Image (cartoon, rainbow, N blue to C red; front, top):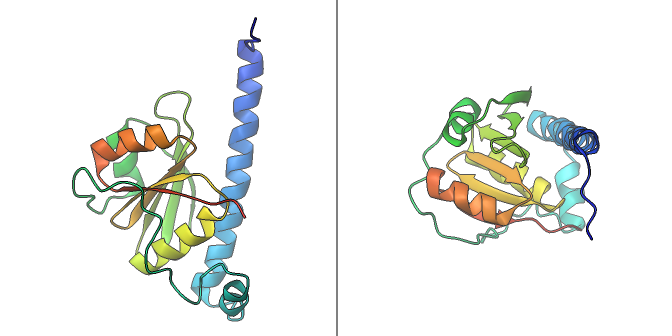
Amino acid sequence: MTFEPGPEARRRLYAASVGVMVCATLGLVAVLALLVSGAGQAAPARAAAHGHGLAQQDPAPKQQNSPKKPATAMTVQQLAAAIGCTPLLAGKAADFRQASCTPDGTQQIVLVDFDTVEGQRTWLDLSQDYGGVYLVGERWALSGNSKKYMEELSGKLGGDVEEGDIH
């Protein structure tokens, strides 16, 4: 016999998971805003000393799949429309915009578009330290927990599926 939570328990669990995602997202936004503004000039050297690779770029990102179709540059709003959800904008930094949505009613997805490739790689390097699965396109990225779902979205949007490592 398996336990199946009721609707109220599922709503509370979903609300808690959204809260955690929002807090993590806001933390990343704050860190990246400092990095982009140059306020943390010593941070890249410190991060490199700890193996986070901000001062030296990893020449080969953790790509898992080859793109099924070209991943053209898209905005957060265009990404949300392409996967069939309404974006909840979480913030705008100097180099990127971020939103979240739930396209299938169960998978919480973070959508990000970037002004530069360098800003995108920095965001991915920092974010992937927290684990997760990422669909990475041309100056955009999606983040979620299901590799299978990201692979499905790759069929619609193009891009490469990358997995983060929890340190």
